[in-house]
Image (cartoon, rainbow, N blue to C red; front, side, top):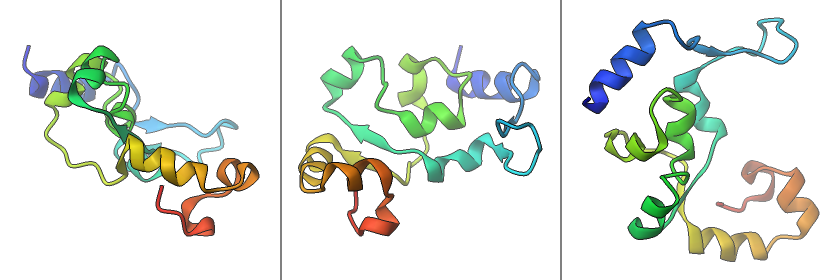
Amino acid sequence: MRISHLIEAGTASGALPPVLRSPAGSGDNDLERIEQEVFTRSLRFPAWLSAWLVRVDAHELHHMYPFVPGYRLSAIDYPTENEIGWWRWVRGAKRLPGEVFLFQNRDETGADI
């Protein structure tokens, strides 16, 4: 099955709702799956490691297309906005104090990780 068929089947079948529901179910914070990209980050690993890890590094794509198996995510032709090389991320994360890393976002810290 081609990846385009998986995407079409996942969105048209109704098997998954098109939105991420807020925990309270109020509807105030519901997000379309495609809108979740801005809230997720992906670490880019070397191709051999990414394949071995079944593409868990495609975190943004996983949130946007949860019906596509992890090993097929690399076939989606979509440029992710929040992808960063794993080594750059490690170096940047180590420069931040732990409480800043855990409890602040990159807008608050100015760190581009």
